[in-house]
Length: 380
Image 1 (cartoon, rainbow, N blue to C red):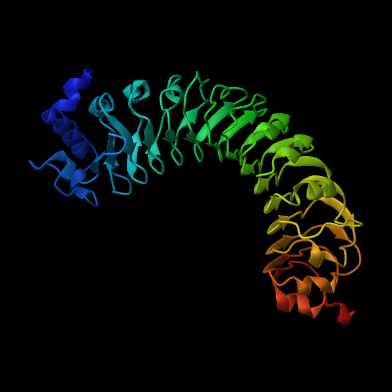
Image 2: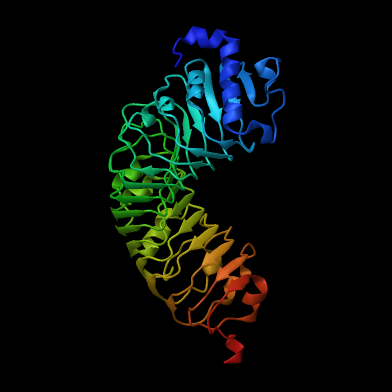
């Protein structure tokens, strides 16, 4: 492979040869757009090739363009020059990513999601890219390598077949803003050490993580979204979560989480808009004897937990913006309060299998999921 920066940057003929190799390797005749490719026009006239004048970067963007085939090894020569961004998202590329991609010191963004890529992540890969790596929705396997110091900000590995533990493997990723490992086969404990104070979106759902939710998660001051749903996590939500004043979305549904439901509702009242607590082992009553008023909740899901008691008659005062309420599969007593009809913003109410009667105004006011033997109170 050519390694001289100046040779590649200045040699227009060489760049053309590399791009032509890519064209034939990915069935360029059948691309949706291949304007000016294979012509003698400037390469900047070729579809998807452009120069970022502000950042002085070369960009190759062939996303959503029906590329079919494999990535030619010659493409690595582009990454030795000022080619900083390569975007192959949403195509039909198969095979593995050439190893030389993982040793590039210039490429800072590589997107190849929604393809048919196979293979593993080499040990050096996560330490190379200093902005964004998107491998999601492919067929990649293996474990995440331990990272050395890097400046990677966006890491998308979701919707693959990665496996094994991640415990402390990302501890040197101090600049991560988004970490998405959703829908893989990861196991073991979640990382204890702080990844970085810039972390904003943490998505680890649909895996096989075990153990407790780490207290260190409360040390990410600008964390906006945490998704831990559909795992095997146990214990209670750490008190440190009370420090997450920017946390708009919290999903811990479908785990083995225990503790007091009301304690969580109190803690998150003023900060969290979307709160999914359903399908756990939370206990206590639902808002009974509480004076919560005007919480931020828009989508609140607490169904299928070990809570009991009645639904308070002033539930309409819980939130000024409540749109969805899921209270299914709970051993409530009494009746559904008529004040539910007074929540003007409520559009969906899941009251499946709660063994209570309801008033007609509830079914008229909202679209309800019942799936049980509920009857109207006046019919009893």
